Image (cartoon, rainbow, N blue to C red; front, top):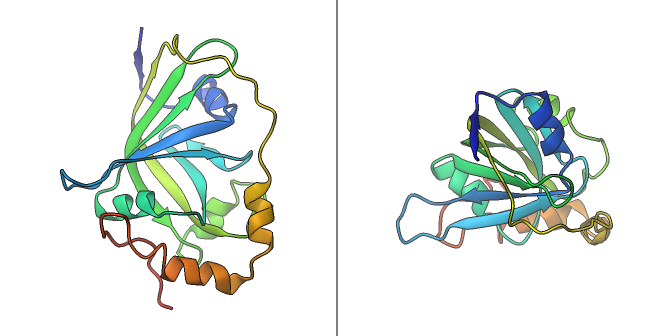
Length: 186
């Protein structure tokens, strides 16, 4: 049976931090807009900030849907599934905001994450969690994790800082629905 929790307690925090992958869902306000679901992973890129706030590191990638949707309406859900051990699914519904390097508070938030993997970092997504729920997860398959892929790290190590600025200014400027993406002055 599913349960609604008042907050992210210690047991739930341990569960969330122990999952190697989670999924982020956002959508634009327009009914004909594209709903987006993104997988997130890599050890150390998710943090529980307190009983009602979480954050994750956002890296330069192929799209900017989450950022665009959060800038438009802030709606977000994070979903964590147990792929080993007892079955469980936890969803964190809330309001998200994007904190860019150089924004007030960025350095304080960044301190919640390991120092490595800064190259290609685009932002930190902070979620003010308003609803915490879990459900059985009986149909989620059992899977073994072999480890993080190092492809993103290797790909980004081959790039200079100008490459990332160019991606943010061009490919990350708008979402697939034309919503504003990464704000840049360059």
